[in-house]
Length: 361
Ligand SMILES: Nc1ncnc2c1ncn2[C@@H]1O[C@H](COP(=O)(O)OP(=O)(O)OP(=O)(O)O)[C@@H](O)[C@H]1O
Image 1 (cartoon, rainbow, N blue to C red):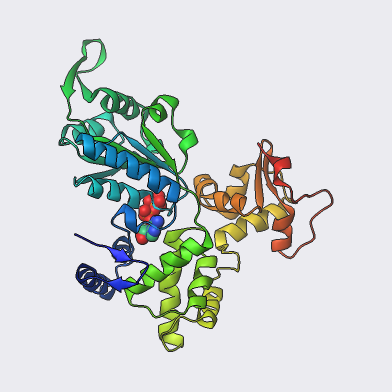
Image 2 (image 1 turned 60 degrees about the horizontal axis):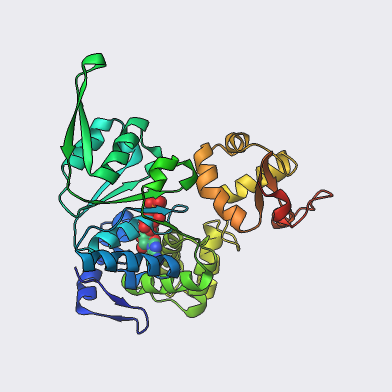
């Protein structure tokens, strides 16, 4: 579908109108995931922020189009909700080719991957989310598929087992990971283009909030939008989610318009603080400072203390806390910075510095 949104004029095209109708229907069914998917930008031009990634990726795709070849394999890394899935969909749509979706945890056996790879058509884009969580045998099969476009199907077991090579058509693998560091070198090296997605700046999130509000038909003031953007943890998915929650509040407890005051009240109600820290972020800081005297403390201990999985603390809470200068990762464990103590309204113990570089791993 030709889904283009002109952020400069905020005008909806006929295609956009149709899209909006589908959105409204999805909302009427209360399906938040459908709504989230419908808010995704559909082309590189529509992507807000990430300008370097957009430029570089645009060039990779244009060159491939000119050569009439499948683009090189692409690795997208970065914290959740910054647009990895969105970019994978855009790669497929810009190449006018179908997108096949799977995820690392879903591929438990090499055979699962063999089945997916052998079903690909020439030029298909295969998206593997959480690629760092794939099993080792599947990973090894993927190396060969990425480089030689071949799958070795093993027949039989033990010493009598034989590998039958099966040719597969050239395809583009798009891998997404929140932990690029966990990918084995040989896999990482086989991606021709690697993009690291950064947290978004408040003015970019502001544009995202206004774009989504336009699509959802939510009336919001400039200051209302800025307020939501500034509390979105640098993350578009959170910006869109907060917009929907503030919209609920505006509808039920106000006159439907998202003003600064409405945004304030709603976000306070949902326990999103002024810096955008949510419950988990605050729990991590709280435990770190109050229970462990500001650290250093190991991430596993921290995770148990807040009642979360280690991965959740490491991949969801920490990147934003580090980026906000509230937490530092050190070889001896996690440490609260002076800003973290101040954020909790507590006096830092002697010797705690604001200078994160002292804590660098
Ligand atoms: N650059 C962007 N401009 C506008 N909206 C965006 C942008 N990036 C992401 N979004 C919005 O944020 C939401 C989340 O994006 P997406 O699902 O692509 O993130 P993700 O990085 O794949 O997250 P996860 O790894 O958790 O699946 C999408 O619904 C999309 O509407």
